[in-house]
Length: 330
Image 1: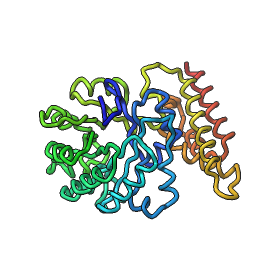
Image 2: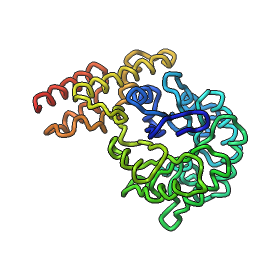
Image 3: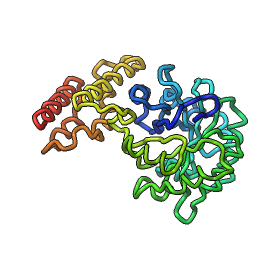
Image 4: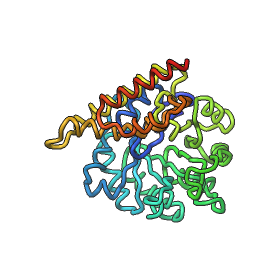
């Protein structure tokens, strides 16, 4: 499977772009465990062209994580074109256009999945971005705005005609948000369309390697993208069976990676304690969601303590306590 000149091999697994999740440290871990492609957190075109520092920082990538894509979203044609040109200078392997984010602060303003209510503008943005950059341009979107507007079959052809080099489809409508089950039947229909020649990447409800294998078999997609199931589980891309001890080691390593990364971008006058606290905040989402601690009886107080920890030593001690709880169980 190829996008442009990038060869991903057979049945590649991709890490989905996710806000406050796919920072460079987490991307590196996912790459280590077998993710064939990773994406940055999605980037607001408007914030990027206004040179908002927190947004510009999301463009930081490492050669060790390649191939890596940067995803942008917005509703204004000129802003999306200018943002794509700025992103190209950051040197990713491809630029992805987000026409799928369902959250109100994005879709409610006409960006992300909100673009599914304005297909002419969605296509205009796509065409003009493709024409404005030399990198491969791809798109991530949903089945439609709601179940009365399941437009993905026709939209896929229109996007291909705009010049995109791959299409990722999340098997839900915008109105579903992340509820219910992802419907892969239309993803498979797009893939089987003889007029479609670009790679089709399936996304939605993939929680294991076995799920991904089944999606490849049933729907014939070229790649599978994994999103929420990666939280606290960067090893999901690996076929290796890791021990619980190894998984806790990885979570601890993720915390240390975040500390080192944030220390490099330390604000003027910022203390070590403040850097540690920001690293902990950045890691909490993964600790709260990781499947590692499922099954520990009466775990709620420990989880609360984990999410309230303010120093790295405190958090590492809690993780070690969890390790001992799991050893006692086994």
